[in-house]
Length: 360
Image (tube, rainbow, N blue to C red; front, side, top):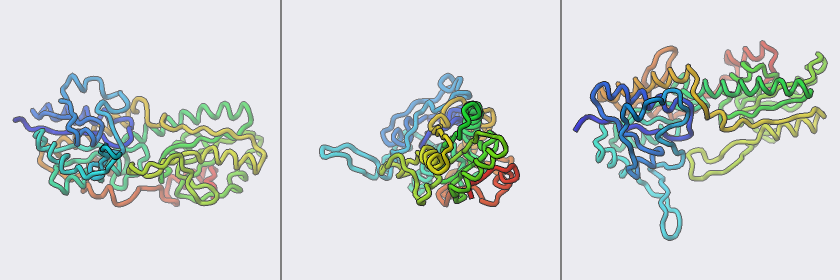
């Protein structure tokens, strides 16, 4: 039997997933290896649902968003939902996942995902599976890498939205609020806010006060600027110190789904100041669409390195970006914390130097 790589995409989707799949497959095929893609994340591995990735299968993938293999952020092999006569039971199916790798002759699995998916990959490695991780999340919050693919595209999408909000805000003399993704990290909000000319940027890393936000809006009015743009990350807490939660998902890696701070903030500003406010929640538009040139290149570099490591017999590693170079780190590093914005870091200092209010 020929040498074989496996590949799967787990967690939420991000622009650039297909570029990684393409890079892994092309690199392996050129070396005479076969590549098996497991469908719909770890559920495809557990249920042994897979496809053979050929040159024809991956043709035209570089510019496509999403993932042709499908993804899932709920099917943890160590806590897998199984339907029974009495309802849903959660069972440890990790042994079956490892057995299916052996059954398919997989010499190494390339797992593409965020913190949850890569933590699972490391757990499978502890059970004997040979795994290489590729970091993915639009939130850019993985501790072990300087940047994840998908982030640049999400920032571009958010910046384009801010450009459009500027024109309607100025026309109607309104405060326009854009709520962006990011979970506990404000990377998308801060970078797109700077790029999109926001007047106020609220991020989870810096506590904010309503009075400070209103003071900035009033300052602009006194300068003859009768509109303001406010960017707020979904992980920003309300004035009582609580997250605004859209949904509770006990079976997912992230138990709560954040969302709604934008409309809450709009109501608070309008009630306290009388300024007319409108809120836009950009939502999953940040996850969709064709990846930017930067994300295509980064995803491709990750995929090539992952394939080379796997074919060289290395495993339980994650590829990462350090400075301008693709490096490796132990896979378990991904579970050691979240990469958040330093409150006194250079990006924050740039925002302050521009006169952007961070709400503190």
